[in-house]
Image (cartoon, rainbow, N blue to C red; front, side, top):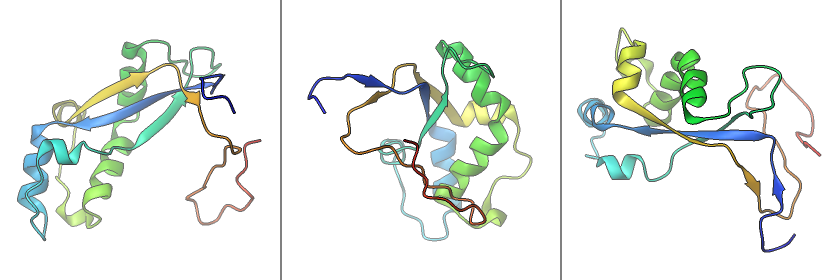
Amino acid sequence: MSDYPRFTLNRGMVILRCKQPFADWLNANDPMPRNFTLAEINEEGNVFLIPSYDSPVDPVEIHQDAVKWVEKRWRMFFEHTLNDWLTDESLWPKNRTLKMFREWFVVEFNSMVWDMGNESLAVEDWDEFEEGDGLLH
């Protein structure tokens, strides 16, 4: 593969960045307090590939579309992020709402995703009941 960008994926991408209320909650509820800074929490976040502008279902073209797309699924994103930090659900905040989600997270969006790797893309399916080799192409 060339050292220059050549291949794009038919996806956009979002990253959820945590805001200070998330850091405050984490540091107050972590059974093994580590006193994370917001910068440390956001140092490495999950990247989520989402539909692109030409997707027949829920197309995402601009940042506002991405925010709408994420907010439509806010519960899943909220729980996924909480679980990344504390797997004990009894420690999670109760009565989570979209308003709380907006106060705790900011959505970053990029519409162009470039494949700079040399190997074929592979998907790891985290559903233990699914089988297959996971190769996309």
